[in-house]
Length: 200
Image 1 (cartoon, rainbow, N blue to C red):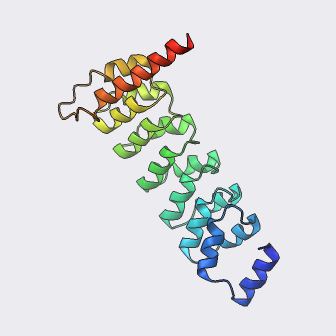
Image 2 (cartoon, rainbow, N blue to C red):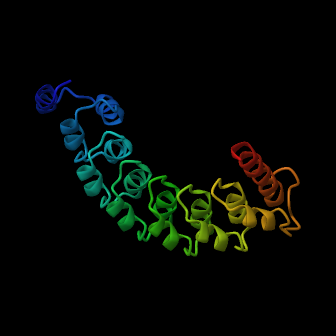
Image 3 (cartoon, rainbow, N blue to C red):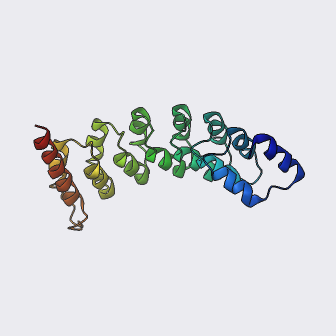
């Protein structure tokens, strides 16, 4: 559907909610249509536009200020969200938004470093899991009192061997033998050492 056809059908009232949902989700929808849908009064349509990878950055920037948290969450999740928008969202009062920013693979190291100090353990856990997290932040998080955070550090492919060696001796007494910090660190350590041997 072209923008002209869309505008005409919209004016005639012949576009159903279900059609709007589909257009908002479709990565092949024209950007002009996504722009119109981004202003829809139905939050679910705006939410779907916010999570569409084809949504222009200018629209994502506008949607990042939406009063609805689910829309801001989708913007924080979107891999095309500009860094300056992720930076703003990383300071959102709503912890769920910060949690999503910490999980975004395009969140820059500077923002991850700040989020690594968040009082919310789930946000720090996502930072520990993010492949962009700087090594020095992973080292600090490897000493976090929360076992889930240490587990994610142990699972991160960028965690240095020295840190993995320490985590492989983690003293958490409630450790699940098959899925715990020690086990994950040992597995990652073995993988990195094999990789080193194969490359050397």
